[in-house]
Length: 369
Image 1 (cartoon, rainbow, N blue to C red):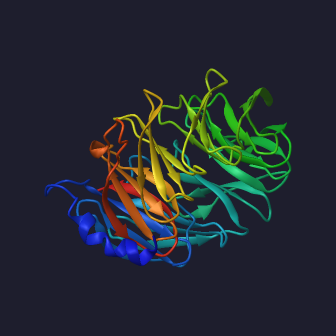
Image 2: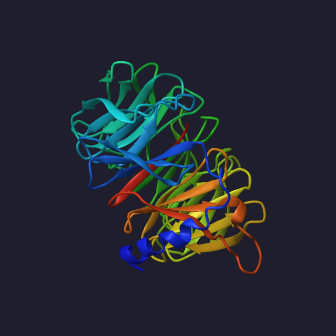
């Protein structure tokens, strides 16, 4: 189905929106890979309310903090551009330029800072969100691939193109430890207690569980597929992995340090997001233009539905009512209502509506009203 065919279905899909008053009191902010704009979707009306003009084409959107829904930051990785957007006024307020391309950005849960991983020179650096200026950087041995900041301790970690994982003491402002893992590393995520980190080793088709303080590998867990993408469950108890090698999802228990199970999924499963109530895992299947829904309690597929073309990033509204699927090729957002998912033989997850947003959308972020 092409983009024109999807747009022709919008009147019929609008009829499925349900009773007046349904929706979420908030907005979805949508970035584009090719347009210097953010599309702002009203999640009560399920329509684009306005557009915010930018200088860059952001790859990632981040929030200042969990409690601060007003400001968000649009990060153009290639241009090294970070733009602050005032969510209440729906306008760009400030911007800053840093040298070298950005490879990762994370908010600091303990302060009003962002941490960025960047190249030329390779480094991890803080961005003070009060002044929107870069602070003192920690230089790295080689270019960073992925970045994470611990939710429980003043630590950051990065995988490097040289095949190392490094840990940074954010209070002391220096390298804490270095661990050699081998070439072709991918994502890295801290465990929820901050005492360990999980690094994707695409070269060895495994994940390594690392101990930051001692700088050692606790265990390497071989996988049945290449760890191209990792998603950590909200409670931190499970990590879901998809990638080349198998049309499946592998579950890793980071506290038990074991591979739990591998489930068959749609054709080349991609990006993921989970909800709490109900406990679902949503998985996009870009080659099949579909979304697969897993019940995390029964560990079974409960629904498969067609969405737009090239589905990618997924966001779940904070009230757990809706899953928003960003369709990169058709330039729209598919909305799935969790209450409409009907486990059973039919495995149905009917589309609630489709919202045209922008060309080649890259990322989305949901904020409350």
